Image (cartoon, rainbow, N blue to C red; front, top):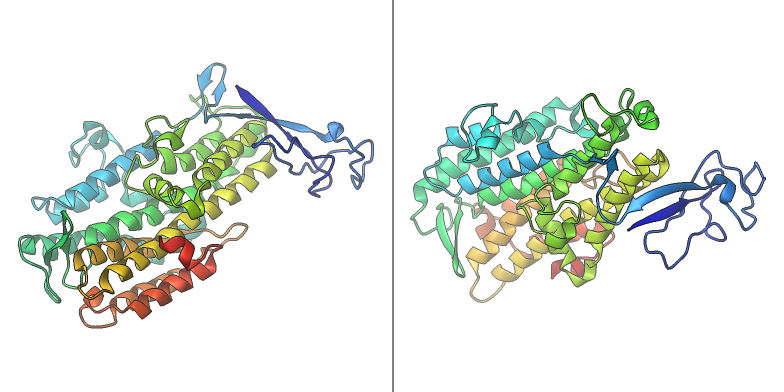
Length: 431
């Protein structure tokens, strides 16, 4: 069953009285329509109890299913491919038979080269590297930072092979790379306690998933590029496709969050379908302090897509801002969470170095990802690259041995600084 949303307003003034839809409808919204006439009043100052003359109907389905002439218009196969490539790379970073050459080739895959175990991935012309730090809004004019960021990921690959693999069977200690116990698991760290595979994994959540979704495909620069709006208004599909280009761009953002779900039309039914954004939307949803965030993100994606079909670009952009805010919050929440969990593991009479370093390595990657977040209604991330780089230096420089020497005061200071930029508290994110 589908529900219809009445999108009502006057002269860009948000109406909260008689124009409002049924308060009991959980997906009813009130938004703006710039050319509407309220009850015969062209100035639109007074709703007058009815907004029918300026009503725009948006057909908002209950699941992410959109069709034209009986054919699905939803497509994000490229995003699913890159998620799968990323998963194979992080898996291969835990196999000592992997060489740096092999891992770098996986990262920068070339069509037809047998880099992966999946033949479809080998046949693809996609790669993880080509979309890392590659958004239109942040990197189209910033080749310097793009190169530095890609070099970070390449350095984590090289570090895993050249520093960690040779000491795979060595007991790690301060200043010595090797293995360290974490309960029933074994972690593999560099000489300063950092797991390179975790930095790579969690760093991709920002540099690939968030950057492409928030700063590329949800950007008006991409959605409205060229003739996209005119073609969408006319219902003109892209050549040989069922979807308009604007519809497809929105779906590509969706794919970076939900591209691995068994049923992408109802993705919250199996959150945790990948090791990237999807997993951590689920983890944050599982915290009582943030329960409901997964549905907020999904509903905004769905309503924004429905608004594109209805050619209501005001509602589209409002939903994009919600997505940018909430996905950025996921990254910020998990950065704080792992800093606090790592502190708790290390700050005890007998420190749990394995568990603590694992948490702090995940935190390292989420801190790294903060530079790819997006403040709503802004052109800026919540934290600049310079601020992120400073956090990472602080995390590792309490002593010459990095995480072996990090103090609770340092971990608290970084966590507090992160939480202060968002609308959550350190205490809410910490457990």
